[in-house]
Amino acid sequence: MLTASMTRTVVMVAFVVVTQVAGGALLGRTQGFQVPVWTAACIAVYTASFYMLARLIQSGVALSLILPVLAALVPLGTILVATTLLGETASWARIGLLVVACGLIGTAATL
Image (cartoon, rainbow, N blue to C red; front, side, top):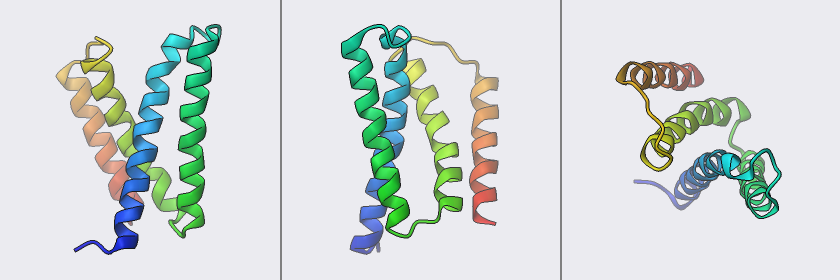
């Protein structure tokens, strides 16, 4: 069973992942930071993400643990959003290799 502290950490990590993926998804709409409204939204989302990441590290989560976890989860979330919401295509081979690579990164983070 998760303690309140563990639950808070999981929620914070999920927030960072979601905001990193959302920020990436917004980048195309900024048209190279030429569209002010989308640029402001993108910057706001990334700012919220980095704020929460800083809070995670301040709360005692090791940088050597959180960054590899994010390096595994953010690309998977990005592929999911890109293929389902943005209409991009991804072959099964590409997805499979990404899953394996993310699994290796996640495993390396725990060693």
